[in-house]
Length: 369
Image 1 (cartoon, rainbow, N blue to C red):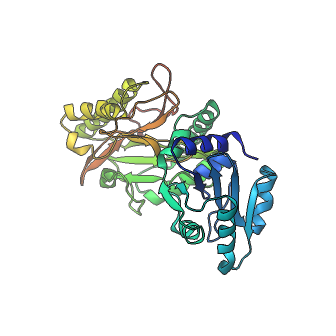
Image 2: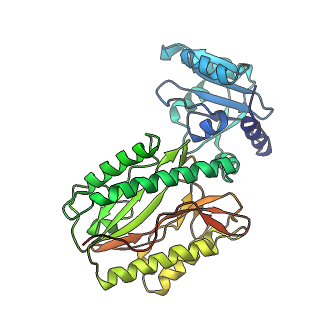
């Protein structure tokens, strides 16, 4: 017994010329089954053949919850002794007719652990990366998925508003991070956040992926906050840069340039345009003011059950945007040793253009005077 999503995977397996797909607990596993299984030293492998047959190899105590969701699924349980786990994999390979077959796996999630158990116990089986198979299925979000991303954005935005009154000269970056995490959970985020918040003050804001530190925020500098919540398994991802006290004319000019680039990308994005050209719309804006060399990363990335997924918004990406695709719009300018600015929104491609799923104000906000 399978569900619609497993059947869609099976169809993609067949269309890709593969014999089967194998998943371990991961966003794609959750998307396919609705089951949140723990990834541990005990292997859990879902196998979906091109003909729609689905089976699972898992610890014996996990099988009951799988069968509750899929009563007729073929299961190959094993006990705690790792020396006997091979028997379950060998039996699954035999019963599913996988000898000499090609199985597609997720390159970014499938572990060596499970790969070895499949390869060593199923004669002549061949494992190949099948990133495109899974991204094709998940890249266009449904209305239900978009509602969850919006909810994740509202949670993140409310949590930051709860946190901003704490910010003053002398507060440490780590204190801001701790407060923001707690506020997101209190506002309804799942405990497993999409990523740990990035809090960069002063010269630390010039590092796009700055590690949170003990540095104290000072007056007259920028504070960059990159954060996101998770709701119903779906992520939000935002960045805002704030002024702590009065900032210089150069800082204000850089901020306005990044804001213009953020808006240029959003205005340009629509069905049929290249992902790379959306990146170009933002990059051209920054380059035109003379800061091109300081925009050091791609414009953005896809967003959904994973914080980083297709489509990736970089200059060379020829993929055409389609309605339902969600991506981040996050141009930045980073002046080493001085300061950095990034403004990030989550956008969904619509039938005629794009819509922002994030609402937090983009204009420069002064947090303390």
